[in-house]
Picture 1 (cartoon, rainbow, N blue to C red):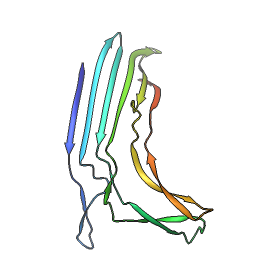
Picture 2: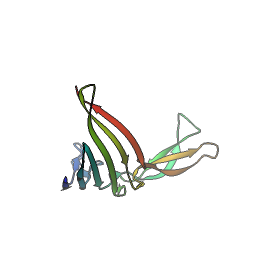
Picture 3: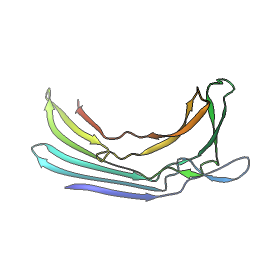
Picture 4: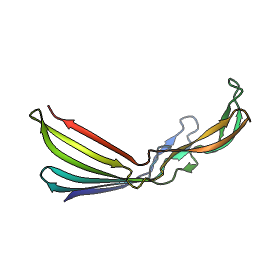
Length: 157
């Protein structure tokens, strides 16, 4: 077995050079957690997992919509207070099965993996969805990838 765990806490602000006002930075992520755990199965096989968790980024909420002067069929978002809301806590678990081998007499590694194993719905942001025919809108979630299986190969030369 091998692995590690890292937890960090921080706070990030920006100062407006004109007003001197301090505001929270939109990429402020107070809490970040990373954990890695690997198990060597033998014969070149390794089972690995990575847990990632973090506070959601700050964002300015969409509070309404206004006409778009350049495209009358589409509305533009109206934003509330700058960086006044935080996205939900982001977390996911990735799982990998790796095989060390050779290919063309060169070291190689083959991977079969699943990203976001428990298919967590991680919100990446919000956007304004126009319904041009009705001049109305709705606010929709922009989501990170859900369950995502993949295969890969590394070849060293």
